[in-house]
Image 1 (cartoon, rainbow, N blue to C red):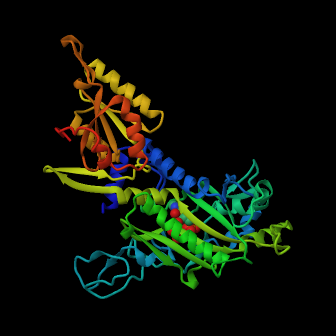
Image 2: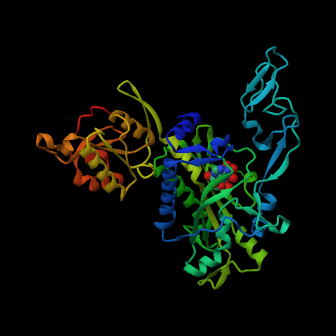
Image 3: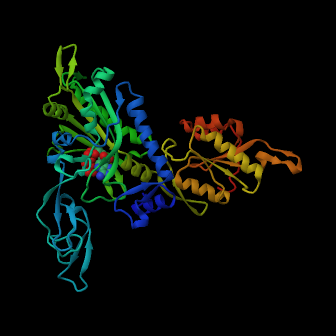
Length: 496
Ligand code: ATP
């Protein structure tokens, strides 16, 4: 798998992701998505929305405001408990998360050596003197303070007066929007339990140690769904909340694989009791083998009735569901799959990245699933100074662009253009050449056929222009290249 540096540099060079405010020296751990990054994000969001909301009969959507009443965060427990333990270095003044100190490399001035400054991998002792880290991991000199709890919410003021009454927070999760709107949605859609409310949107956390590219940032986008179940129900002999929790763990685990992530790079991790959030009965993380190691991609929690009960108690509003059969009001239990757009993007990118050798040359290819790929089709003229070819190529690109993300490129020779599309994961290229348009001067008519090249096999076929749309509908709709290719004459791969 590619290391993080390779991914960061590819992302910058090809316009996926840029450092935020770069011309001002950059804002640490803040990233801007460029032309290809935007398409990739849109695809991830759209697939999640389609699979978690639109294709299901029991889930509806919501878009709540990022700014919510400050009391929401008091009730949810975030004001008091959404904290990480933090320590400061008394010398260099840097801050660290106390619970992550052993994960990072540490600087050591070894008393047993002359040339004695070493950087030692996290949690390992010094090879020479056997000492373990006791001081600041960064400068290697300062003592660390005792851990203090640091609240991760980003505080802000609403209105012109910056006093306590004006304080509110940028939401640290989208979930609370669903809880406070539970009754609004229930009254509006009249669903029977179980049903879910889903939301995709930005969240903010003042992380003490952001990093690892877009893995941990202070501004990020979540894809969350609160699935409300009747705690009095059972499914297959199991309490309904436990059945649905397991269902969503399996469903979300399968989702990442459906769109191309290899199973061997995914695993489930059960939270031990002492790690559970204050609201959780059971939480299972889906972890991905990121370039820096196994880390959380998505968490699926059984939040019980904690949030609805807490909001009902704080507001005096009833947040219950009337169980017609049992003639009683119940407070639903909630199962929550909570993933991140940015972390998924990093996982899709890392998993797709392959460097291979083709006829003695290095080829970098992003083997994105077609539905994830930012660009689906690139239309390339073989000769950019032949007007008929250029005109035809643009016409094809414009026609295809009505259904799929399609680009035109004529800025290099064809072999180079193919490599560039491989590197950004475009599944198919269409090449227009002299044979397509013919040669008026010589009185030759074109054959009105173009070459389609497949990214993964690099196979090429000759397809009539009028058949491009049905062919791409088949290929981009999940049809196999080998099946389609068997129907058309192959084109010798002269350059690519
Ligand atoms: P972590 O333990 O990595 O801080 P978490 O358990 O606090 O994550 P959740 O509260 O479960 O995360 O949030 C759900 C999802 O939101 C995460 O799985 C991740 O995909 C995304 N997410 C959370 N925090 C961040 C962040 N700082 N940057 C990017 N994505 C994040």
